[in-house]
Amino acid sequence: MNKYIYMTMAAAALAFTACEDAIESETKSSMDAANIFSIPQLADAAVMGIHVSFAETNSYRGRFTPYYGLNTDAEWLNSHSTPGDDKSRICNYNPDPAGTNMNTANNAYAKFYEGIERANMCIKGLREYGNSDELKQLLGEALTLRAMIYLDLVKGWRDVPARFEPNTTETIYLAKSSCDVIYKQLLADLKEAEDYCAWPNENSYTKSTERVSKAFVKSLRARIALYAGGYCQRADGSVSLSSDPELSRSAMYQIAKQECIDVINQGCNKLGSFEANFKALSQDVVTAGNESIYEIPFADGRGRVLYTFGVKHKDVNRYTGQAQGGTNGPIPTLFYDYDVDDVRRDITCVPYEWTLQDGQVKGADALVWQSLRSVNSWCFGKLRYEWMTRRVVSSNDDGINWQVMRLADVYMMAAEAINELDGPASAAQYLKPILDRALPAEKVNAILAAASTKEAFFNTIVEQRRFEFAGEMLRKHDLIRWNLLGKNLASVKQDLYDLRNREGKYADLPENLYWTRNGEELVVYGLNHGETDAVGATLSDYTKQSWLGESKIKDEVIETIYVNDPDKYQFWPIWQNFIDGSNGMLVNDPQWN
Image 1 (cartoon, one colour):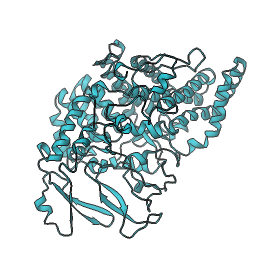
Image 2 (cartoon, rainbow, N blue to C red):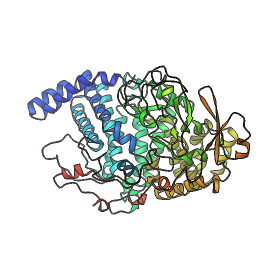
Image 3 (cartoon, rainbow, N blue to C red):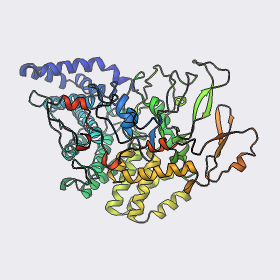
Image 4 (tube, rainbow, N blue to C red):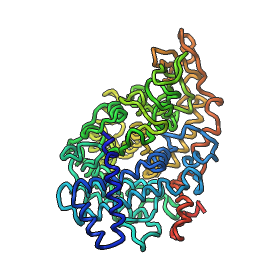
């Protein structure tokens, strides 16, 4: 269970106190480092200390995970505040370097470097004193966690200081390094870590998805290779591929292909049903070997995953002690773009929230039922309080892990890379398992038959990754690396107007929805293409509810998806607090000045 991580907090704190004290004197440093990093129990506690930085208030928990990745053609911020609101600005490609939500000394940018420093200290100590297979496993884990954090730094801010050794008085202030420099270091680090880490269930560490296995090392290396070989906005403002020959697209696709094939062929992880993966995540199942490959662990009273991405519960009730959920949601066009038979649709996109049944008073025994939300505030349904096997104990934190990597992504990365290198005939076998569990066989065959050219197969990958990973915060950087961010956001903005006005591909939708209940569950007519108001009006015991039209999706809501050209604001600025504290070493790109 993920609670193990936080049982080691005291030991980790002691270990890092010793490490930090060790910097002060060479003799003490050698003695303390030898004691810590030659003893598996203490070394393990030190590596667990890296995780502490994940869960702190404004790190992954409360700032990076809730905000990075919005707004795209798959997900957006559900509050729909005015474009000038600070939370909206973080997401709508107009962030304020001095904004109140991110510009604090304890924010994600700082906490990521805190985690990197802890990893650097572990790596240094384990390289010198870790001379057993168990300690090598921990070295591989530290290298991988550092790579994961650095990847998120680059995703958020692109060019950042490269810190791959413990801090010294000479390196407190560093200028930014190109993301290309960082990518190359991460690829090399993970290649080394592959030699140290065991496959899932091969040793006591890799029995849990909260610990780093070789499957995660390899799949993370594949992801980094695809990012490094893709497009992004450069320091001069242009959007381009890397000019570094070591990061050529062909070389990066080859790395991604081989790493993904290795994971798939090893067979340590298995695809189950689409729903089963997310139910297991909601139920704190961290046993290795299923679809989940690695998760950021949160204790019961830590982490805001359901708070942000779960189905909304308006009141404390029999399912949850927390009235939260629904902060972020699928962009409303997403639901209508799925095939009606795609099992991912109704799991990913939920038009309802949970409200108290008539006459109920909020509390631990209160009965609830599903009630329609508005068309512009759908909930993600991959994570649900009602699927949990324990009760939330905090008003803000729910303890659900954040899934960083699952096997479906490995299959889809393999399909993408192999299509580019070898063509669609070779790539299809890696896309097919993802389609097979989502759609009827005849529709899978039709999709694959239509994807018979390299271009068509790539377009299918773009579409299917949207359907597979919506709400998992992968889409934004996928669009960036494909050079589709601005294009797809402009397209989805037009789609929102078309949906509102029931035009174009949304012309066959009714203006209203018609609903009734079967016990707690909502039964809705009018959400599928081809359903009509004429039929809806004949349904007995159904309530009509206005759904589409200008009053339901207003111009200002649609326009809030982006304010500036997304391709000119692909990354966040380094927040002003860190610019001011950098001794003149850090500067932002010109658009932020």
